[in-house]
Image (cartoon, rainbow, N blue to C red; front, side):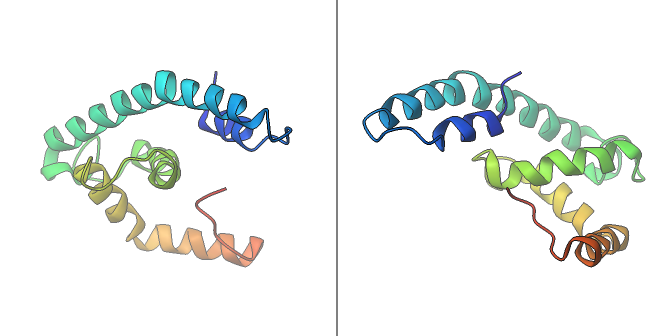
Length: 124
């Protein structure tokens, strides 16, 4: 499966300067032809799911947080800086992620990562 990380690797690969336009072109074709449309499909689904979920979209599967919400927070957080989508594109998804990040349990988890790793990064 091709991932955004693969495309980033192609773009940043150490190649001679005259080959760089070719590798960038390949990466752009993969990104625009495969990754962005698939990501849009998934974000559209999540936006719709949050619009129709109980309690006005506070959580995906009900009125209380579930394991699905916790597990989905990781790729959504990574996606905030990597997908190119904005809060204007998917307001419910961004509000949902902000709400998850404001939870005390989330803040404790971030602090634990900082204690162990020395920092908390949401991007590569």
